[in-house]
Length: 386
Image (cartoon, rainbow, N blue to C red; front, side, top):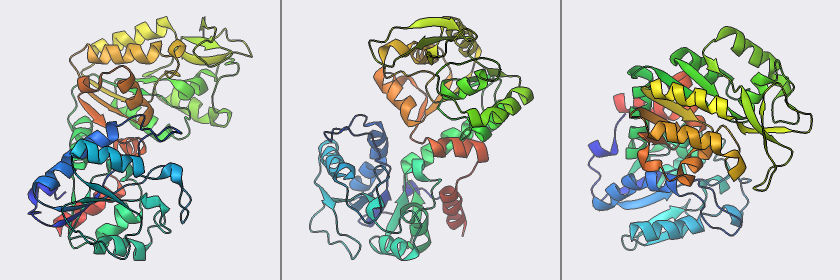
């Protein structure tokens, strides 16, 4: 892919599609800023080249055509102005053109407020492209989406390229796919096995061991055990059965932490997975499972992790996730971690700087590993070669 680092961008108008889709509380405060921080190198590079900068991002999944104050980028514009030490103006009306008075940065209001964004409307994409000299795709986490601001704009822009973040994402994921140090351990959590069925198959083929947690593990456990009131997918039992029968390198929890409630004050019990009562929920892995996982991680040379193994937001159910983090950071291994909840866990335990590579993608992260390509990246590669 053509990189922003290989182009003469001096004094050009640059449209950067970033991913500033960060969790925000009901008071409008940013809960986790890691995605914004990882987006800054491209913005700073363009600033240093004297560019006029337009930044676009979505936030959440609003109804197109309707302004939603809770999903406005207002707080993000304030945050960017502070960390960049630069004037950042939030623009609500921009589709008919933008006029730069000084060297301010324009942050476009939530791109998903626009009708036609998610349908990749060609007229909308062309309007985006008309705003700039160069389009810079830097939102890896949305590069599996064929939207107007991620895919359509590339077809109309005078020139398009990849940003620093996007280049780094592909470089590190390619390292995992093409030239990994073995043994490889993959850790997959999350609530639904149905949405991660294909990636589970792919990782089972790529990895020496695959560790499962969360609702995915519960569905696999439910094949042969009563899992009480735990989160799982009864309609995905056949998928779970296929995975277990075909792949023998999947590690399923053998014990767990259960409770009848989910809070910091919950009464908890540690149990074997074949001894769970009807009103109990599996909310974390037990110490025997933790020991097995830690021993596997000690043998590993490469770790890929997406999805916590317990409800780590509550102190009573974070031991499993914390133990995995400690095992990874205490071993000299190449580690790639992706997915919003997993990144939040890294931030909670203040270990972001101890992970080899943090991917901003969740769905895109897994899709790229599964297929070794994504629509936006394929398009960027094609135009780079022509």
